[in-house]
Image (cartoon, rainbow, N blue to C red):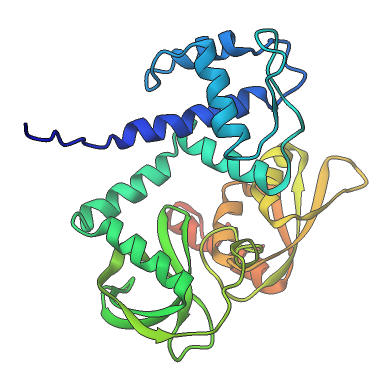
Length: 313
């Protein structure tokens, strides 16, 4: 009798991961008035079309074997059918990792989808291979080589010490240091061709991603500016959200209708473009270089729509 080939089902494996994330997330808040137990968890998880119908025993066995024993997360299941709850709160790196992973399953990231679809269309035969080879080159600290298309359409050959793959601002980037250059670079992976991982090792340590983009709003890494700007109460909420990643120092001015923010940023042009949409509600006070850049953008964007005397003040 011919032996039957068992075809693995990756979607089933992903469903198991999703189930773990659902359970942990539903149990996180101890103040939830809903009493989560094996029956109620089985009921709500069974409503997810990607998860098969579950029972109370399925849930309790799954928690015991996978969440408690495998992952080391303490869950109180001794109360049986009455209530299932986390024995201690999630925090720090564990919480951050679970949150990031859970968002991949329950939140639609349209920008990520567009980025990866473009990458897949350009590299249908090797998109996964490229990511894997680049990723392990960062781990093994191996120099890579590739042909690259620049913004102005030129094709150049690059040798690079790869540090991090980064999804940011509608592109998939490789952050690293090109051979012979003192500064680091962000290059768009979708523009790579003829990737080769060499046997040449490098010793430079990769800086943490959070540190690399600490003072960056967009994807440009350059000169750092210490900025002071003033904005009105009318745009307080969007401004605080926009600047939040930079951890600005924000003070309320005497009249309580205006605010002053101080922060450090490296992508000057991106900052000015974003502030442009707020018009008269925001003003760059310092540095002079950025203030003049903003004024120049305002004049240029006026174009044929402005009167000659409009900017003569």
